[in-house]
Image (cartoon, rainbow, N blue to C red; front, side, top):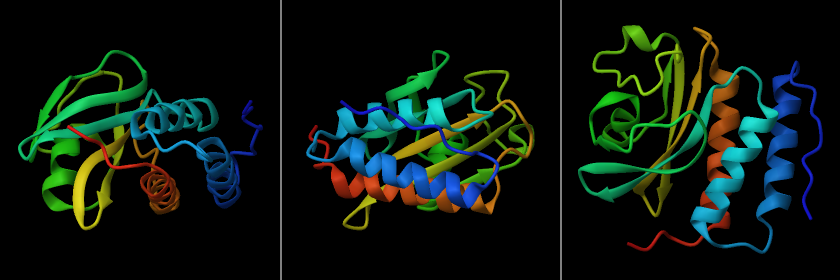
Amino acid sequence: MFAAQAIDHHDKSELYSELATQLSALLEGERDPIANAANLSALIHEMVPDLNWAGFYFLQSPDELVLGPFQGKVACVRIAVGKGVCGAAVAERRTMLVPDVHEFPGHIACDAASRSELVVPLIRNDVVFGVLDLDSPLPGRFDADDQAGFERLAAILVEASDPIRR
């Protein structure tokens, strides 16, 4: 049985290094992408401070993301590629770090309490198949260290999981 170990969240380098270690142990021997995404969203929500939502959206078609495993309040179920922060991350094939979602054109407010957002595209064999989405009620919650840390976690998830079959 896996048990998350407390991490000093004041040192971001240590936080993301330890999260990567715990995630690798958590996913060891499990290849199911939905189960792995569910456990990663729970791990993030439990261990990373100042978040109000942590979860996934997966491409249902070339034009639409559909809600996957998450922790937090109920969420938008479908997001068009190119719309909102999640859709922009897919369309632009890059991580989107948004210090204030109210300043992001076309932001989709699933939770009115969210003020900042970080979205990491999930890419396998040069194809985007989903995103890791993180929301915070604090403006400016995410920085370059958070971006690098969550990109590392997303890479571990992609490597540890079989492709999603639709």
